[in-house]
Image 1: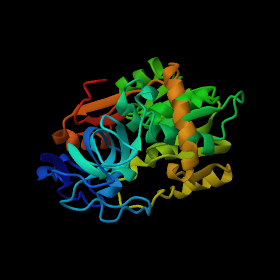
Image 2: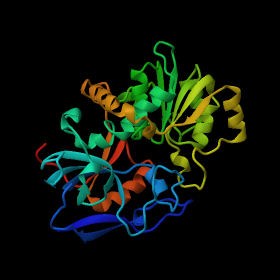
Image 3: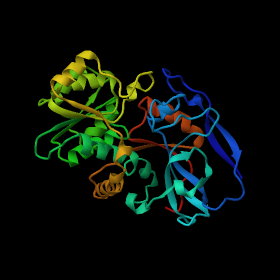
Image 4: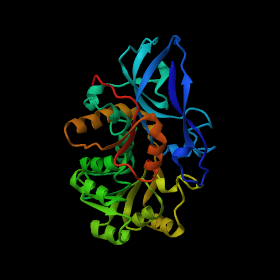
Length: 351
């Protein structure tokens, strides 16, 4: 059987911007038969995420993610449907997911590497398992629970950067659900600002490309900032930290503004900002959701419940076709997406 796949065509370099041409689509043959313990699956949806930028380098700079290899198939979060199974846990028609799903239209996988998912948790929107009811949702929920120190009724102000992205769009809503009295988002377009305040329940939104961010932040957060969900790093984060209250907390989710630069993670703060952090006793600890696997199952159930109750609004940007995944990745890295960036490979018509 001939299938299509995407391989890493070239590396952008540690200080380079990734482009669609860093990826290449090609055809490959799948064996006609699968072995015991294996399954053949048809890919439905693939995820593109900011952390993948690190995997484009020869060294990812992190011990928990491996680099992609040149001319080898790329992998990441994926959802698919089983077409043939020789694994005792799976039957034809089961929906499965993996964090290391090859970017192929169909693939033969070890059944032990897969996890079965229940479409009822997402009302049939299977792609949500790659976003709000998956790793980005868990990252937002557990990050706020573990590092935000939110106390309901204490009038805390939460600021979210990258607020219209996969994690940011959820983090603001989750912060509100867990007790923040004021939620302010920072993003890069007027359209995103309107979305945050009109649909996602943010009290205010700041377009960092328009006007003075520090002034807008002071107006939007008159009582200062108590919790900062940081997706971007760089100048925006320096501005937010300078307006944080004593004993406040930074949730280090991501630093997308720094991923195209050869710097350590998390990137060091400028000396003046670091002085503010220490003087005001602001916590800024590295957060890695994979360290909280015991919280995944209850977290998914909580996110699903909020979604079904209409308390958690989910946004996606869906690009169709495996051949467009490189362009989708490039767009995501420059803020072209609203909510989770998803690539639809093959729709499940029975849903």
